[in-house]
Length: 306
Image (cartoon, rainbow, N blue to C red):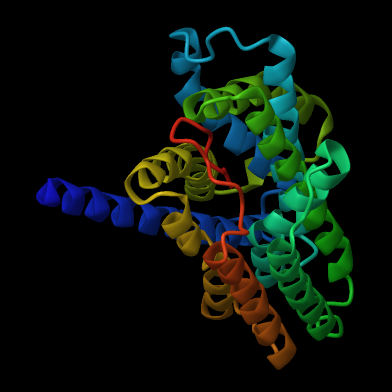
């Protein structure tokens, strides 16, 4: 039994480490893609085209079960359209450090706010303190970078809109009891047929100007890694480690992505920005440590998806 437990822990730590790398990489890859040749709408198109190709066989095999169509559409609208479209457009206006803090970092805050306003869930003192620390870090980051990135506030608002969209998706999933594979397949198969025709007919695109290497890399990362593989790895790590230990890994994402953006993208952080990232990460870790972080997921519940 001990050997089996040790093997499970090793598997869990390996999966959690890969999730940490993929989620942090999503911030950097999306920022690089959105400021390069491709438009944000192109990034979304590549994401949905690849995810649809990977997940359509699962839908055809009955992975969605008897989930009503309106629920599938709602999940796709919030997680598959609202979240990534807001994020990709935001990355054209704000640096990666802002995305690192306002996407994973602000998620507990947005989830608690939406749950309070929509479901009437109370925020206890421990959670309130944790969320207050996170909010202070966000203010520090935004204020510290204001002069260096004077128009970044528009991207910040879009990051918050994307995070809120993801929070609504999370609460819908909890409310409806959707499993991990069902949530992943639902978002993957409904968004491609809805989004791709609109992109082809009406949205700005520079896809023909991009190299095949860039197209293949962004499609693979956004669709196969960030949308599909990270979800499956997260679920496997959740089984092996449990929600509390796994949440410590996800709490490191804001700091890791913000710091990595310095050498990789050349986006340096000032003293206030570095302090803001540290405060947000500290607030998330405190929330997990005191048990006031994101609500524990069932083993068969959906994993967060970047």
